Length: 551
Image 1 (cartoon, rainbow, N blue to C red):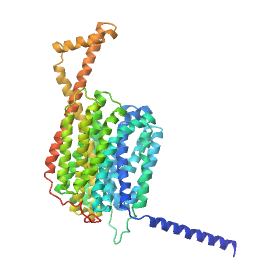
Image 2: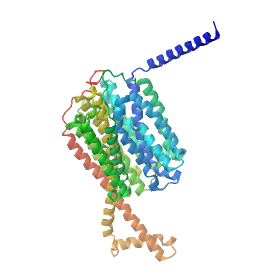
Image 3: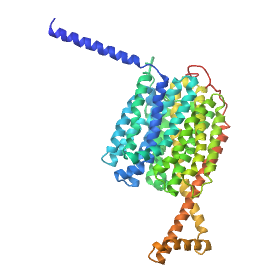
Image 4: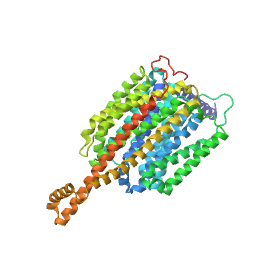
């Protein structure tokens, strides 16, 4: 046999061996709903943790790069705007390419952008990389529950929801202590590098457990991406305006007005596009159901309610007690441990009781915790919050599991699980509502604290004016206290007046944060009223069926 023939034979053997290896690898990708659910839940937790780390660690990022407040303010906004953009657009990508392909392509994009972010030569490059990172992990959220609901056995679905609640709530609350630990022991760069550490495990789970989508048969539906693009861009611009509105003075800023106007125009364009050329991948009328709208309002409000832990407590401790992130982290970490237990307990209860009761009990518990926090004074420190935080951890777990469980039941009752485009539409709607709820809540709470602080400061100032004997007595006491370290009586009196002004401001902020807790408590009362209007749904989480009804 000639050398050429021998070489061709060897190449053929190698090709056959490679083909055999490839076929074995393909066979190894067997559907595994548990491993696949772990992968998509890791994605949801990674996206939550990434956004929270960026928000909490922004002052340290500014310090590490030598940036001003206004310069760096757009970094988290760019990331969150991209998450909002990818919410509706992931419906198009998920239906066109399948969950597996979208997630496996988006993971490397997110990893690469996150690794490069701290190495950016300037702010413009860093902002662009934030956008790319947002594109990478923006699809993690909407595709998470889409996959889990269609894959998990129905008797385990509610426990998957319990794990999902621990995943999201835990990632939200652990971000502050994790960022503080990174700054103490590593550097600000790890604010970007921590979350990509979880992504390879997510990719492994998805690769091994989520199969390729089946090949479509029959005529391929005509799919348009323009409506998705218009709608996604419009929502992201409105989201950015809400995020930057308080800093830029809302409608007094041309940037905010331009973003709102452009966003509204793009949304109108998306509606017109939908009306003139209906897209088979989107079923908007499917969302016009009383239970769907009430549950969406509950989710919107839940993101607002979470600010009791994510915004009010850290804000109070930072403004009044001067807590650093590491100290604040030790306070909010108390919420995580009870959620590990209560997530399981609430999931067990959802198998036997109406989800409306679980949701209402959760919101009522959060309201009680906010009323406990509304007793705060300027003397409160971290130790004063641990009892209310234990109560609020129980309330948040019950609320989240009950709410997501009801969302799942609604998907089953409406038959969405049997229609891929409907469940993708449903997931994108819920994801968009969740993001807007968090952003509107944050913007509203920032404005509320600012306005109420000014109100209380003016009100206290009316009773602390010059000539009031209590004010004069207070100034004399403060003057005596600082006179030993002052060059003269004039300087001592000036310092005493400044100290009194600081005390007035401290009390005004305390009352403003108290108003914030009371606002959340009243919001919980309003949502409980809405929950009472939900139509009853069949409890199916105790079913022994291997698949969700209609799935």
